[in-house]
Amino acid sequence: MHSQLNKSALSEELADGIRQLGLVVPDELQRKLLDYLALLVKWNKVYNLTAIRDPKQMVSHHLLDSLAVMPHLTAGRWLDVGCGAGLPGLVLAICQPEWHFTLIDSNSKKTGFVQQAIIELGLRNVQVRCARVEELQVVDKFDGITSRAFTELGDFLRMTRHLIAPHGRWVAMKGLPDAELPGVPDDCLVETVIPLRVPGLNAARCLVVASPTGKVQA
Image 1 (tube, helix red, strand yellow):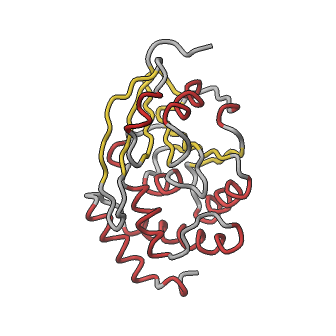
Image 2 (tube, rainbow, N blue to C red; image 1 turned 135 degrees about the vertical axis):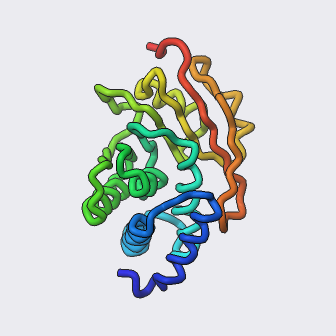
């Protein structure tokens, strides 16, 4: 699977990026991340899951970009909205096997890939749903909800407000979010905006952390 990907170079790139992020990811899980990357490269040729074709670029733009949020998350049940090819949810699920992740996207090609990756990687802490998030109903609400390039911040909060637990947090991956902050609904509070530095990624990256306030709007 890895032959055309120059496995050792990608492994070195990933390990170096993880060190720069200040994370500790066991070798076994780093290998699983590269197995996921190999699946992404393979499926991308047919299903056009990501515009990035170069595996080396995928390490920085997909794996490390997703891992950069990990220090700012807490253990629990997470929902990844607009997960696409599994970013960041599948990457986080690989590295946090004790947490539980639900990934949702309305694109059946992408959720089909994610389901196959879950099976091939032997992940037991992930489920995927092909649906629109505003139509999703759950019995147990989520401790955390994340998204990566899903939609504007205010829309993201409104569309998922019914899914977050009272103690929960939204963690939205953004570029420069300043223009989106005025659109935050009244029943949500932006707690902090955290700048991120992603190794190999020459672009602005921030995390917007928000929490629910008061009652869910009917």
